[in-house]
Image 1 (spheres, rainbow, N blue to C red):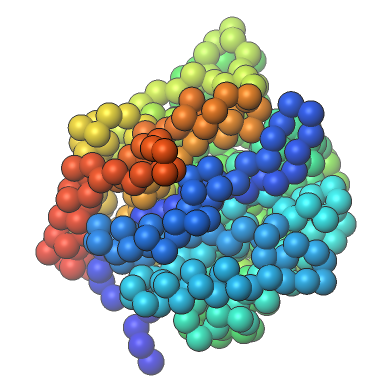
Image 2: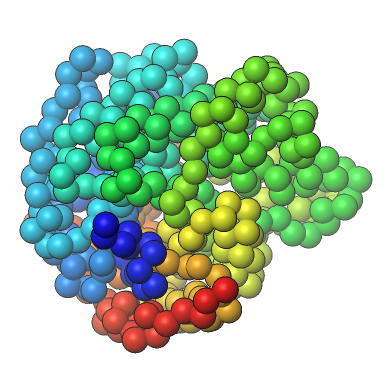
Length: 423
């Protein structure tokens, strides 16, 4: 049997294509589809070529569910067929996001719909079945805690639930869909399937012991891992957030279901952005969190990345990877972070931590999610994050290579990627 890529002793380098899809609109909010905003929907053939030329061995890439399944009983495969054929042509490994925000327009109440878990599982299994000969690596649900916060607690995205009840409702719904999707895809793919679980590496610092923040800080520190703990069967009576779940309707029977049907990651991915991933709590100041009421942040550089990778590896007993990272900054600042973060990952490997992947996110610039709530043109929301800059031209968005392309390629072929101290 062929050794899985995540067991071959190599530090694999890849890139991502930003793939947020929130197609629902309402007054003051326009639909957001990052493939359309970045013109990847029409430039995908060349874009994947850029990823291969930059030295990427894999691409984290998402399926727009709302387009692939435009009606409950109808799937449209033609575009996706072409994209996955291009992956195969280039020898690029797709790690496929099946849910990167946003449900189809026909699914009323979105994630809160009673049939959401079954619907997302059906869609996921259909994708796995159709491409089982060439695509084997999947992320069933990207950043489940960000989903739960934005669609639940913050009421920022559909279905616009709010507070602790909304958060818990989303955690349970997303978790059930996650479990059913992975179990269904495992039946299709068997041992060939590789499931990369990915969540945002959120950290909290500052006045965590201030009386007004103590309960919140307790919840925040543990909810970073909550959905992953739930789907892997780790939430029982002793879990620090068990009482939160039970208080809002996730009872012992529900927890028993998750324990009985638990799914495990083949690789656990951490999305880490040094200038955003560590939020601060200040004594005497209320910060609700989210775009509408952001907390101040602190740049902890590679220290935060190292801490989260170590904890993820220890907590889930699986290989880990940096599934997203970059800084939104000038090219020299981006290059500095590329070198620092890749060096930190290699140091962790030398110390026995089983880090198997590094993902620069994204391949080219993206547009900030605030575009959804704005009337400004897309350029006003461009985030300078990519190996390639996006440049407005009369012919559309030019992908303009920066010096980061060569820097990334050098990191990807570094001979140290093959060395790893054994535990």
